[in-house]
Amino acid sequence: MTSALPSPSEPNTSRSVVSARGVVKRYAATVALAGLDVEIGPGITGLLGSNGAGKTTFISLILGLRSRDAGELTVLGQDPATAGIEIRARIGYAPEHHDLPAELSATDLVRHLAEMHLLPRRAAVQRANDALWLVGLGEERFRPVGTMSTGQRQRVKLAAAISHDPELVLLDEPTDGLDPMQRTEMLALIRRIGTEFGMHIVLSSHHLEEAETICDAVVIVEGGEVVHAGTIADVRRGPAGLLVEVDAREDELAAALTARGYAVAREGALLLLRSEGLSYAEVAAAVQVNPTSVGTLVSRAQQAFRKEYVKRYGTA
Image (cartoon, helix red, strand yellow):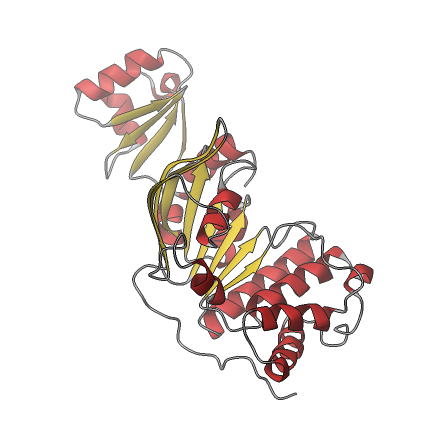
């Protein structure tokens, strides 16, 4: 097969792919995004958060399908509120839902969507076939989508998202409904597309482990706000300091540590001491208590981040 997809290339290295400042979106009395601030750079970025956190709303604003109520937003250097058509021509999108036209074959569906991105008919047919071969559906491309499994439909959506050679690909829950082996294969495929073909990818998910597997950076959204953003290296390194779980007298211990010069953040029975080079023994000695009465040192770095993530979002 002669591929009509773009040749593998170096990723676009522009400074910012998506930039949001104070973005607000309301649905009647419901605030979906509450002053969201984020910079999404080149490469593959995981957009994480629980259901209802605001991920899908943010994606709809990126696509220019909904208007924001406040704030500034640029996508690939343009404002989707005023340049929505131009931006959508440069973006590939795979929605979360699996409601695809059941009677259409995979190749007809992908070809149609490629034509909607202004590809000529002949080029759209070639791109559709090549994209379906790339995602592993070459032999199945003439089957009606309605006869396909959930895993195959996810691959059809991915093929449609990349068939027109977009600069940015938005994938909303691309592993939803997949078994563990299918998830692994899908993630490897997404990583290949992002690295070999130089497409920036935003992967919406509620699984931290997926972001850790293939992403260069992560953005965590909760309650319509960004609660964490950084590279995967930042996530694995975790907060600078120690996370201590306290059994009792949390206020007393926090006050004692603050008085001794430690920066202490508290959330319930958890105390996060933000300072480089701290050790559990130093914390215990600073307040002159038996280490076992202070609580349990949960961890440094990745384990500390995982505990907070699971606490907030319910799954790793």
